[in-house]
Length: 239
Image (cartoon, rainbow, N blue to C red; front, top):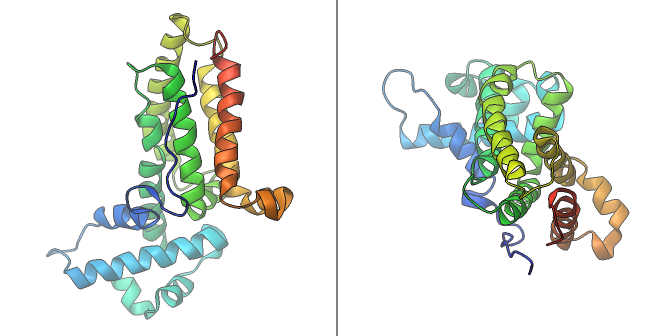
């Protein structure tokens, strides 16, 4: 079978608005107190969320402070508190929006499609996320290392429901003989682990690959390798 071509995004260009998509999605979830926010107020809120992403991804939830976020946003602490009275509100807004976008590639795994291009596309989409959203990936990893106390309800709710749904799709493909019999949950976990490595351990990846191989082309190299790894592992016959 000829290789399935799944277009990688241009280097440096994030999907559907790039990293600003996270701040934009978070902003869209805002619940204005009283009358709707004005354009300037929405822009201020967006600035706060973008600054908070920098601070939280560097220092984690426990290490970050409202003062640090206000300084990064270039505004006074009282001004920031007008929009977000507690840092927990900022963090939860960012995490909820991040998961919503982060899980979109899994939602798009088409149950009526052919498993080969579907899985190849999913692997590449996950690598695109790692390339374009490294701060968000590190923020999520940090939350997981702390036991996920602030998003456990999302993990046990929406995330589990989605993975259960897609695991059934993979099982059906296995029942139809299109994929080799394996544990669908651990297949999904393995794709998460191998693709998100390129965000969470980017410094290590670039250092080991060196100057010649550690440029933007490393993501395409990773995509080809992971496609081969997973396709040979799950297909019932060579493709």
